[in-house]
Length: 589
Image (cartoon, rainbow, N blue to C red; front, top):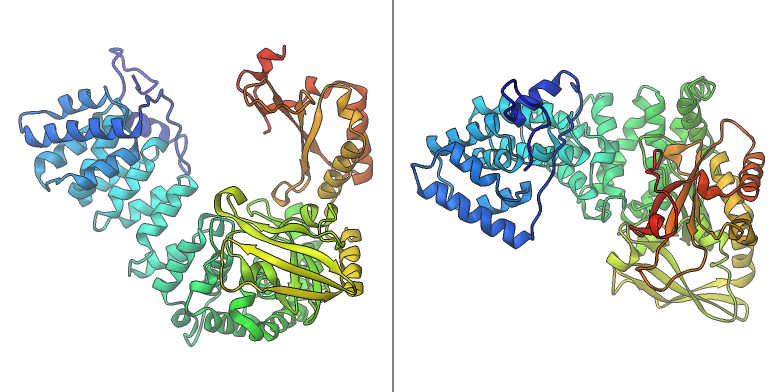
């Protein structure tokens, strides 16, 4: 039975609501932990049982909230079950149902009963209930239903915002979705302030449509805050990180970009705005906005460049690049470096390695974007994911053209290719030309070119240049490349310990950290039940030279069995025991 982990003086379970109140002082700005064992059952079984239970309660006026609670305690109940079941039942708006919901929230010692209480208040809740709903919503098992309940109560927007700002990302997203169409000025302002990592591209588009961005920017005087917020929405709509890019589905894209860029010279210089300008410029140049804005994007990019090159912006960036704070310094240096990159040619074949904002709160993807006649091909023909990484396209030599045709994946869906597809093309050399044909995309059917031809000499030169160019790397990424190249070239390094290399990566959000994985045993098994363990090493640079760090890592793998120091991060469930190893839970993975 799932009960709160603390007991009263009479050794009776403390209600989850009382538990939430106790924890509120200790976690005033974040969600509270909610320990407890969760029962489980098949979905249909869960929902049929809950439906029967609630029908009995609604049809039997003599049944008390305590009796309802006790019956709930015998079931496996999830928040999604409560939403689904109550949406199909004819839930009356009455005082008895309202009282039962309040009682279950305040006194429930079973999670399922508390969830049912929240469900009963989704249609029956009143303004006075907002406080208890927001409090129980601090517990993660109840947060999404709490959002749903608060969103249905007129005047409960302050409590919903309070809860959203202290909750998980998905709860903030649910709250923003619920409030996106509200008319109150302060609510609209809060919705627009949603951090970009919380926004899906679809939600960003819905906010943009409901908030009238052209009207927001067409005021006689536009403050910095709405200008910042519009940029955030434009970038979120153009993103493929959370699903499909939506920038081409937004009707006012060109007008908003034009007005936003026109206002840029009047902004107060700051590092955050310089980052926004840089991200928008790159998205117009080689990202999802390029096909939408079309020929006008060249002028927009040039105007953004002029803003960042102005003396007051240059001075601000120079001061920030010299800051002691490493995050501030590297972000300013990134903006400066991006401004010095060569422009994308208007004709022919080009490869642009695009490095995102090196912020610990961002995604910071690195993409090898292919540009043909000035237009990025992934953005043109695929909207479900980013272009492949330079390690995937360049380090492997997959873009090289030979007389033997070979298919190359240029982009993969944000989930996986097996789930939502990708963009692929077949590359072959035919005499003095390189031909890209047999395009395949899960995003478009009628729009793909039959084939594209390039001058072979120019094509080879560009591929060779891009393969040699490592100027985009930061130290940790260089370490990751050097280590994995060495391990793949010399499999005996890990082979002596009956291991084989997995992947080695460095992400911008962990700027000074490298993660290496390797598998034990080394032999690949075709049977999923065969035991295996995936190990992981976390490597910190600590301002050391990348070459020195890579050599030290490889030397340590040669000197001693890395299985003794690495963390166990994957593999089969019983792998460690069957392979004679003692399981150690990961601490940094």
